[in-house]
Length: 433
Image (cartoon, rainbow, N blue to C red; front, top):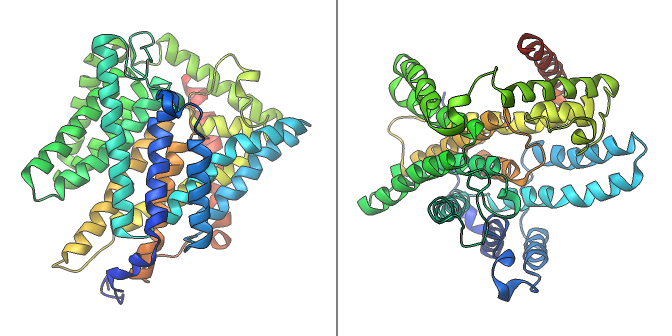
């Protein structure tokens, strides 16, 4: 029996119980986090736009409905304290205090997004804001590429486009655009208006070009992975397999840094050295690691791998929490995206699956990019994680037969997976060195 057949579907009006004010505030927060007008609009320089928007959003969450579906919300809170514990374990008490307030806003954003994503229309609105911010970032990138400077006053670095604030690193900008790509594809495929379809399809193409302008090889591979999964679902494994070969060849032929995509290249060799250094940090402090945010205190460069960064800085405790946290996000997204509904589906059911699939693809984009970038604590994957967990909580009220995840049942499984991941990193580094 399918999920939809075994469920009694509640009216869509259930999501109207959520606060419209909360959704609008969180959407505004998301825009402020990405676009950061307070950093380039003179009238906003002295206006406390960030604390005000955060404070109002938190107040709306406190007085409104809370959506703490599954174990991920608890794991995010535990992860915050685990990162602080990694510094305390090394005797750095002031460092733990500073880190708490440095990483706390990221965790707050997760809870805000999670609370606001309880509903089909709600999560689509947040996806739309995320995607529109991506378009603004591409316009800024085009200004930089052709004029040398964007509207924020930021310039390129080694001919690589970038933004300001959290997206000042070209790798972060590229990763954001890759994560926005599935949202544009979703809105394009689910619109009946030709001009709207064309708008979002053009947006998807602009994200790919913007990611290319960042000259981030990791994010280009992530974009290729997103498109590959999308194509695989539509045309099957044989054709998708052929596209893998063609795609890898095409990426290697792109001008600039893309032509130097090999293990023997100096940048790639330096990353392998950084992975080796991260594993050595784990060996010296296997329980709590060397401390959150201190990787470059022990090695000349960062890990260039999200998992290795966590293994080295947070030890086994932090690695277990991190893998379980994002592992549940992946499982929830996959469960929602590939659930079996009866034929024919209603329009609402089709839209629900399409939203789930877009979130799944966005998460895949982050996971692939994370293999080449150190992005364990940046806010953007936590935004997608918040959307997934909030939306999955909503779907479980509509389809109670959807799987319920419990950390108490899966703890040993995550322990084994964490050990296998650490061992796998050792094997990969041993082979590449």
